[in-house]
Amino acid sequence: MSHGPGLTWFKSSYSNNEGGACVEVATCPHTVHVRDSKVTDGPTFAVAPAAWTAFLGHAANG
Image (tube, rainbow, N blue to C red; front, top):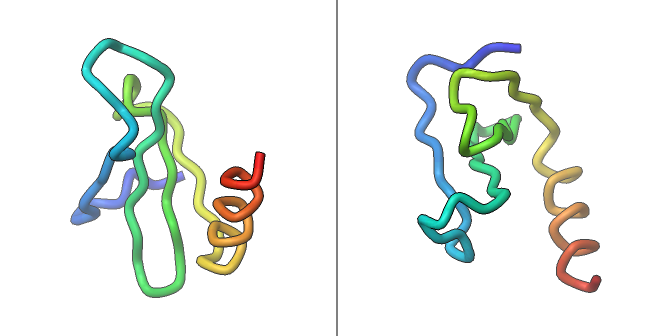
């Protein structure tokens, strides 16, 4: 589980600064990296862009 030197991490636009449960993502051509925004030096995981897109579609539909 690499923290990916050189990755640019983004927090959801729905996140605020009140310490809620948020994730951050960093994208590469073949991978989407995901981590907990409160534990930036903690574990990460990576998925294929198609899997991330499917997850987002499912999450958006409740």
